Length: 90
Figure 1 (tube, helix red, strand yellow):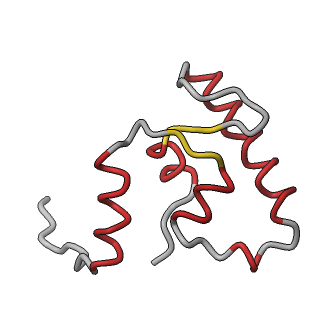
Figure 2 (tube, rainbow, N blue to C red; figure 1 turned 90 degrees about the horizontal axis):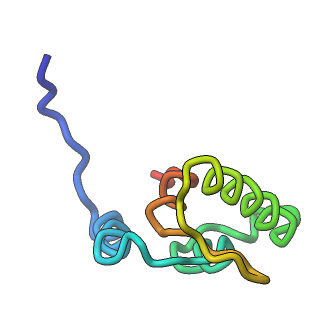
């Protein structure tokens, strides 16, 4: 069964996609990801706690699947993984 529908690519969607496509292996911390992709951090009750929790989930996923990430004071993850972890808002 072949579907012929597709989403119209707004310049916003495209800009976001290109950021990832240009360098999918680039590492970003959770906080940097939220800033770079204009995610609404002001909607979070406690951004720092959220970022730390999310980072812990991402570290677990990386360890489980053998995905390289930066182990640092502020761990950083491949941008493609972050896009998977945070499905983009419509």
